[in-house]
Length: 489
Length: 147
Image (cartoon, rainbow over all chains, first blue to last red; front, side, top):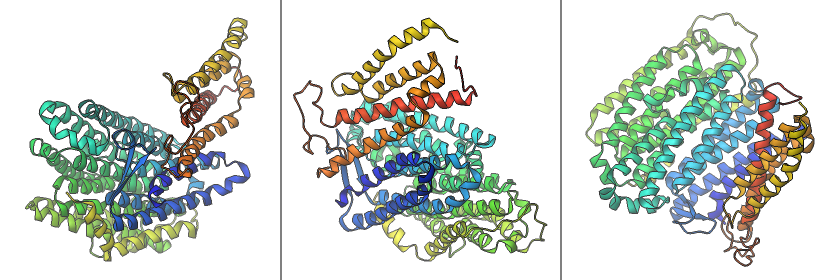
């Protein structure tokens, strides 16, 4: 029975998302508890799956009872359960926050559609994490694209529609690239299953080198657009800053990372290692990630809108994940992967804290935040913890991932990247710390609008995430132990 | 606009289109087509009806609310059928291995759960098409005659 849990959790999320529009009138009040219980169940399942994979190793699941080359296979290994845990935990916490916040950002009639899209998004991201089949990957990719655009455009104002349209066009372009890549691979090998493709590709390289290179580059471009790697990031700032705060938290914290995890799987499990000796794909990713880390921070410095600044900072942080992939060493990859979780924690917390400030004080401009720490000490305290974590101050989880990345770079004898990590931390400090300092010690400006009280249901998730940032800064052991088994290169 | 030619032709054509749509849905495991293609045919028959009469006449046949219930229902139906495989002690969506009945090959009822799945997809696609059409035409701001 427990082996069915991965597929049951995807089916449960899909089922719940289809049930949501059926809840009308009186039943509408049930939508939120129902969504939260489904998210809670999926989170519990993901914790149990971690235990299961730790105790009995990776296992695969054949949907429909058909064995691999014919049927769809789910492969549940350490990386998959790690991603599933990250996705479901953050989604659960953000939804608790969203329960109150969404009512003032979107219309009440479309609330049930928001739950539908949110659950679909989580289902598709878990699908991407678990699948072992190229075409299933593409299908879940499309579902996640559409639902991610949906949770932006559901707030019907001009900016959101424009931003989500831009996101839709670029993201679908990315999906198109991935589909072409899948077609190329299928044309050469005749398989869609990762393991079978991986078996066939080493022989196929001699015969069809260009097709394989084409497929590889299409995958890289497609996933880079979706995960907003530096030169292909232009959709991200608009999309993530105009969306409702819970959507921003999920989009910045999770959605861009899952594509990085997907390309990681393709690069290391499907494509043969000899290929990387011929084509400098990893080096290209590495230098793009360096550019992303620097450019994201520099762009973030000049922003005036707080959510826009956080969005640009995401571009820099996704660079660290790709740096871990590009360095191609155990330690560095560990740093990159643990940054997926760490950044998901801190960035969703920062977005939620920014959302709280917007909710309570109606302030978006960074200059107006002066003195807000006196009025909202808990929120700004959490924001400060997130800012320290972004900079990478020891004792926060941001330090752990940068530490492992830097050690990984030193292991490989590439100290240049240590310098980049240090420099980017300084740049992060330049734009995060003044906000914190001004908020607590700046001269108070008279509030422009009526100050609203912060509801406890919105504050608690922020504090939970802040506690997580500190907790995993001191005790990263369990996560690192799980990931060490995930990265057997 | 009340064009007698369009309305009469539509009245004649729509039942045939719908029967053909259902045929394509149910023969998904035997012939080209299946849930998606058949559902698109079914949906377009309803769009045709609403276009050649007017939106309210279409809404009387299939209301906006009903259509969105059907949309959710199609998806739920698919997942429940998938869980049937689990209930029979096999994997998700398992068909033959779970011991579902198979008739003679080539006959209509010879695919186990496949035609039930096609039905779910067909209903979902048809109602989605109709809902999309509705949403688009309502956005235009024309509640009445849609020409």
